[in-house]
Image (cartoon, rainbow, N blue to C red; front, side, top):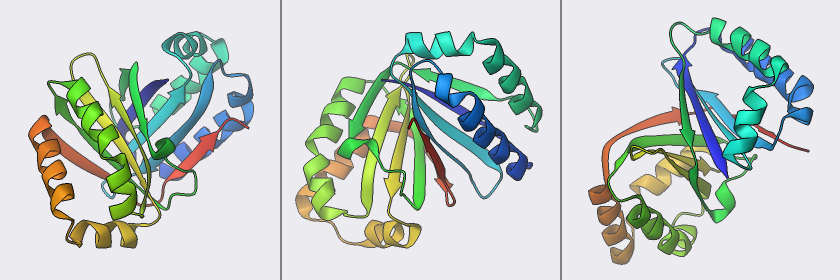
Length: 201
């Protein structure tokens, strides 16, 4: 799998949402290797889109389509400033990657020096996470070549997520969380309180 993260400041939220809906109807059905996406805005108008393709080659082929170029120009015109694109060929899924029924999504970004260790820790902790945090529906971990990672965590709803955060975890789970904190550096969090999703039919 290949993931592209789109990020930028946008106050014209309804227009941008409508533009992505139009892409889903007009471009999505013929998009090369497109699998789906997770989108939303933070409280301070930061847009984040996490778009999934079956491979980097498919994503690049899709980017080369004239209709995609035209749509991308319309999209970038809605942002307040430059739009960031982060391409990640190193992608891992936990708990099937997530769910389009999620009511709350948290985007976690940071740096990791040893991506393989982080992926191994997350995979080993999947069963524990499923038992300790039933509010977590799934996660994706996308790592760029320079070690920048973007983790997308889908929750049933924000209230359950906050309750889960404050709940005392078993000692084993606490130790694993501590190890994750040691591996992940310069971590920031972006909360998408009203996420929306697209998927290939």
